[in-house]
Image 1 (cartoon, rainbow, N blue to C red):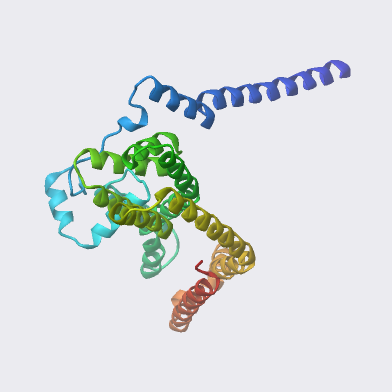
Image 2 (image 1 turned 120 degrees about the horizontal axis):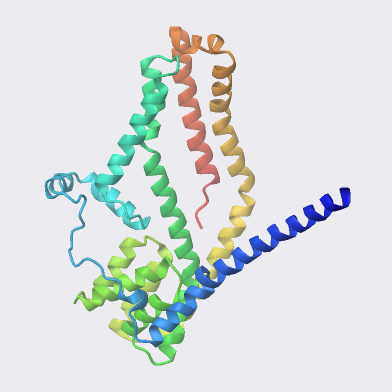
Amino acid sequence: MDLLFYSFTVFLFAAVILLIEGVYLWWSSTHGKAAQRIARRLQVMSGGAGRSGERISILKQRHYSAHDGADRLLHKIPLLQRLDALLVQAGSALTVDRFLGCSLAAFLLTCVLAARAPLPLVLRLLLALPAFGIPYFLVRRARGRRLARIEHQLPDAADFIARALRAGHSFTNVLQIVGNELPEPLSSEFRIAREEINYGVPMSEALHNMAARIPLTDLRYLIIAVLIQRESGGNLAEILGNISTIIRNRLKLLAQVRVLSAEGRMSAWILGLLPLAVMLTLTVLNPDYVSLLWTDPTGIRLLWYAAGMILFGVIWLRKLIRIRV
């Protein structure tokens, strides 16, 4: 009986391992990077549109809402222009009105949850207000990750453009080739620039629009080099090769700085979150003991002092560990 049980266990374990490996091999062969790259090449060779068939809006002004009335109203608020630019830089499909709706929904949900806690109304609102900024924080985080991926793709893109120019392609054709061959998200930006040129936008304006969508200093260097070469001439392929080397060296230095400042960043996270974690733990374990902080006037003043000191400490630590390269 024991031998039969152990044999069944071994065979079951082997079957599960083989099933997982089979699913992984199927996924990588149909949806992996290599499969996507082969599919793009086949589409280009067969004359299909591929990813270059994507079209952009020819409207100069982006829609903030699907409803015309709400769109006109939102366009009257200057602050929402920066929010719309943030959504574009993050590569988000949300419009401004949907983003505001998500923020309001997060705020109301937090208010409903905080209403069940034995806290005063002012403290409930203070706890619910940060929830209004959760979508903004997520979009900022997505923007940072997207820009970081683009920044790491820029050296390869510069080398790719330089090789294509040495092969005799025009810069307009190079934009199309880069949009078809390079991985996302940088390739989509080159495709948008190519489509704008096809719609009749001057190349300089299309490149400036790409720089506005991707606020990276390295990309501005690349665009400035292209524009200067178009005005005064020169060996653009050699210039792009030098820019690629500079970007790689800067990214290498940035990685070293991040390694050396990792301890300080971790200390900042711990020191910033520790008071909130202790406060939450004491509220759960002994709410009567902690309730003096918001029921007694002296406790309320101490809470405000503590919040101000925590905010000052977080800002100070952020300036200490944020090193620009």
